[in-house]
Image 1: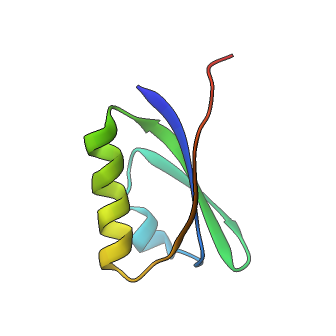
Image 2 (image 1 turned 90 degrees about the horizontal axis):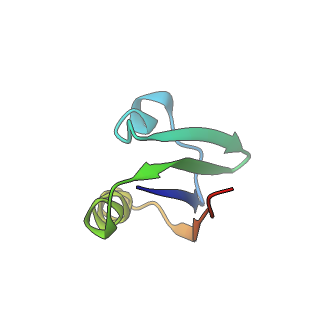
Image 3 (image 1 turned 180 degrees about the horizontal axis):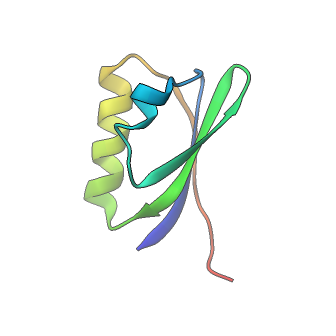
Length: 67
């Protein structure tokens, strides 16, 4: 598992955030940061593809190092 942060240029509703159960949403007007553990690159690409298909711009993707 890899701890990942995805920052998008939109305020995701609770309903839309629930589409990403492995990620916790934090809202920062007008952006949202999704943080959580993703199992592999395929899961990351699935999240990114879904955001793109919804017309949501991804601003940043970071891997959070283990402590």
